[in-house]
Length: 364
Ligand SMILES: Cc1cc2nc3c(=O)[nH]c(=O)nc-3n(C[C@H](O)[C@H](O)[C@H](O)COP(=O)(O)OP(=O)(O)OC[C@H]3O[C@@H](n4cnc5c(N)ncnc54)[C@H](O)[C@@H]3O)c2cc1C
Image (cartoon, rainbow, N blue to C red; front, side, top):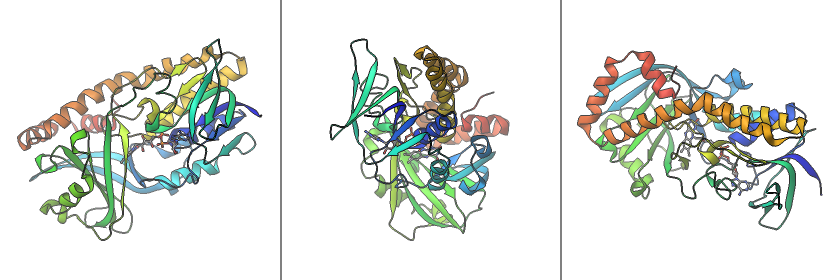
């Protein structure tokens, strides 16, 4: 059996970016995914504060540029001026797949990993799939997203993290193409909404919740949202195709490495708590992890893997903690229109720059 330097479980956001970086460093990598087609994606657009050129992506992946995020509640609006984008998720993944160095990165699809094996020295020696096939490497990486197939087994992620769940429709859009909406208030009954404009007078309207008791009937709730007078002015549903998924929102973790196992992405809650931005934060984490994985392989020592955690903590931990506090405040306030009004009033008093940085999850 072929032994790789690195086996990555999961070829989503984190796995693809990590595989691209490892390939660049000529690291023999195997990327495994349970999907049969990596472009079989559950929802297609993402809001992001990413600077795409920083991650070697082209303008092709941008579905729309956004200059303003409108926080909207019943009879109330506040514009926050931002420099953001709506990403076309499929195109992002297509570009990442095309950029993998095929001399160093192998991909195997339809492989559902369910076990990780350790020797008597506690070193991880292989992962294996549902059919009993095993895959050996020097270093293993869990990029399996909310499944956390390895992170949960080794105790780096709790078994049942709280998930924010969302559903979306692609609809006709009558608003401005550079304005996205965050919809808050009692009308959303424990949830919140978003409108992401696309090209050609289309938009994505989504509805999500952090409240587990609200998860059932989410699609019906989104249909109710579409009937709200403020929303009817902005969008019109003309199809029944609903997309959706979940993001881990608790807890904020800062331990991602055990022995020769490294975790990146939603498998260890690396998504920004405030707006659920995964792409920017997870891309950065994957690039960071690649540096220390390559160092460990070159020096034949896993000691460097813990530097990934240290570097991550310096870059993200205080931001994450502040975002987490802001998230709790925002979502406890949004259940009452009075508190939403108060929140919007307070936003108006703060400089735009401060509001924009809170939304983006970056505090300088
Ligand atoms: C409704 C919704 C809206 C979102 N909106 C935004 C947004 O606007 N902006 C933003 O930046 N982020 C957004 N996110 C978050 C973002 O999509 C995620 O944070 C990001 O995709 C996580 O990347 P990941 O690589 O960790 O996991 P994923 O991209 O989920 O990839 C995990 C991969 O692992 C594979 N896998 C899982 N289990 C196994 C297994 N046992 N064996 C083999 N393979 C396995 C899966 O098939 C998948 O391909 C949103 C998420 C949701 C659900």
